[in-house]
Image (cartoon, rainbow, N blue to C red; front, side, top):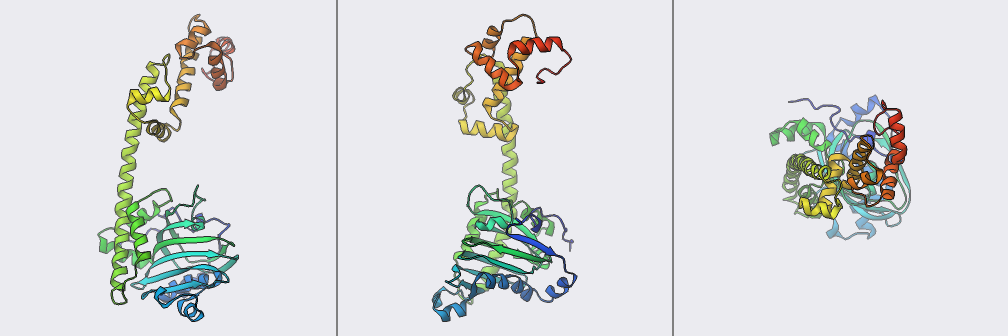
Length: 373
């Protein structure tokens, strides 16, 4: 069996926000203690955190009258938030003793701090609300995001702020499970790890998200539940690997299309600097929407079409200023400006000099680069 690479994932606990999660220390004895049994290792990682934030096992919640019996799943472990501490519930199901599916929808009333050991896990999930802050820089909005991660053996501190909301559905694997499932799928552990490492919050993979939400909503019977969740786990891994591959192919194809769009636009712009080059005109000439044209320039050239046009006009004007005795007024017309004042303003904004000052200075110092300020 292929050895699992140590550093292949680029989303690890080292990227967790220090505001929420802090690695305290390595503990040589922790490895021996946690590796004694996968079931207990997984439980000993998750359940103390749930207890710290105010969750209780479903039996206790049922005795307290906080939930109904029908709300408890027939498989796995359901935990319910003490109403005095917050609201919501968390469920996890351990599959084959070394893989775990987790769903969570919790809201905290008060701040909680947990310190304890982590178990070695490699996984991914669909995270929403404040949950994303554990893994990556805050997203621009609170939309659910697909994120991969890797935990190693160490002691850590986790801070849950008051009024924080945690919503997620995820799959986590112990290393030996990674090897077993990769063999079952006909891929290598590196293939699975590589796919997990691509989940940085930017990939949509709608089919994978849908499948993850399905196991959150599912309530299979006690007899069928083990088979259902085992099949769901395999489905998630297949959709992960296939989805990342398809998304990568689509992005590569889009990059080529972006380059072709920019090349065609650039040729037209350079040949028509004295004409109307508004975005509306470019839409008609190139038969593209403004949004598609702008996206292509931003992804391929890191600029917008209008910024590119301004740069081309100023660069062409700079060459004209140093070539012969063409008047500044005529040069302005050659590069599409209706009057000399608008041209001078645009030229100065980019070069720091007026056209007349630029002509005088550059002719006095011909060794300088053309547009050096």
